[in-house]
Image (cartoon, rainbow, N blue to C red; front, side, top):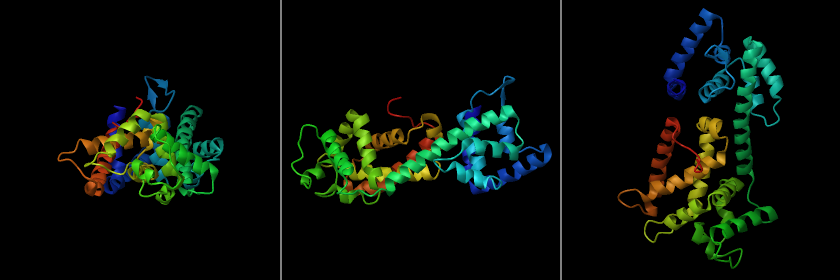
Length: 298
């Protein structure tokens, strides 16, 4: 039942028309019952017992309720800050919504989870805004580590080398390819090969096909941009509520892009990349909506 309601509310929040109708219905319920949506959500009972932990469906609705609330603008902003005082925000929201102590406990758990996902967005934004610096030893070490993990049996001859093209960069200096996504692009590529080396090497092998090839690293950086956009638009909320890790989503995204590419009929070439990526993005948005996206380790 929770998942059926979740699908219904996903449709509502994705449609401006349905959202307007829903807000009207909420106002009527508020007038009739003298309670707010947050009050009703935090007073959910299961079998007559207090809910021990909010379900993902409840977390999603609570998050959306706060996001669209005109009464909780300051609290929404506070939850977006990494150093948010969760106790203070919980106390304020509880007072504004007239919650009981039991309902406040549910609210506190929910706000903690919501703040956790907001911190993921904050962290990803910081990495993307951090430009790759050739004079930064840490940045250079990460780049060399990426090569060593992607090509463990092939030493890199020099920092500026045509070898970088072998793992999908555009030229002899990969630093230039990180301009759009900053260190976020490099960190994502490194996370994938570090945590799922077999998957990453399999993807690189397919990406190196003599006919249906595509630039592995450039595709990875493009997928960082897409993952960030989904995160920013809150389309990753349910995934993060369940699995907590942005990087796990990125790994799923990259691995399944390759599956999408190599299974396409007729076979694709690099000239089909932009159109294929657009098709893949739409598929991922649908899969997130249907909740079929899971970490590669699951």
